[in-house]
Length: 388
Image: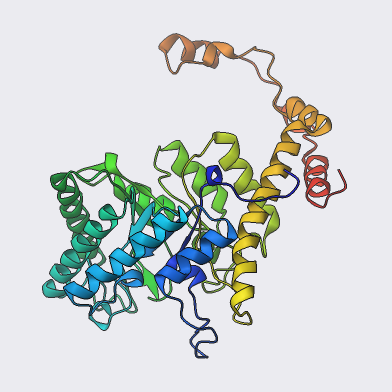
């Protein structure tokens, strides 16, 4: 993999809002020209991406007429056909418009909640029309600044009712869609409900159709809370709920930075890529990030190429890790099993419990064993630094 060029089988995707980011932040206005959805599709084709994802209003302005909507969608479809870019994921913007300033599905106002359902149904229709197979829900305004204002219990019930309603809607329409819930601890709300991937997994079990709902974990969102993102991804994978994934980078404890993948925490990025490749994750690898505010059009292309290139470099590093004789010998030593306790396999039985109670363990010897993790970690670092 000497040139690290993206190919369709890598399933690298970007959102309209990512490479289309104009560099505006709370302290400064935009620094780049806004690109049309058609221009973004052609940009992504130029840099070698596989797919493009979108919020409803990234593509169709919230106040567009029906005729305008049809024209925009037709132009977008033509761009997809002309470039071969696909649209595998869609989502709804339920956070920008002032109507959602106190939430969408969890708003105290029943009219807002009804409007949020209507808007999402229409956006699901749009996603299905363009071929999306995954529909993501990020509740950016589903939270609060003061718990005096809203019942967390009622908010959870309202969110559940909304997801149940929308699952039934998708099933009733015959759409081949899976829903993926995206967690974030804070920003733009002071506290956002269901703030971690683990919280989302617990919530999914309470839904009427848990089989069609999974998660869309994002690197930056778990790092904001100082958590280990790869562990969250592993939990989602083990639960059969890793329906989509958002890749970017983020320093711990900061507000959402959405840096280029691998731009900051390269060791964490390596373990993540290694996990995804080792387990055979075959979904889209979506880069939910944006270029530095310092960049112009060419810098945006460099950003997009950099996300994909870093992933492929780390994929190669993971392959080397798995083939490194010294590393693998250490892992074999660490995980040595002479079969003494193979009889414990297969779960509980009364006989196993009785036999285990009668076993004698050398606790001191167990505590004295040298696991050699320092050496293993140093070998990993040397591999990442390119000296192995």
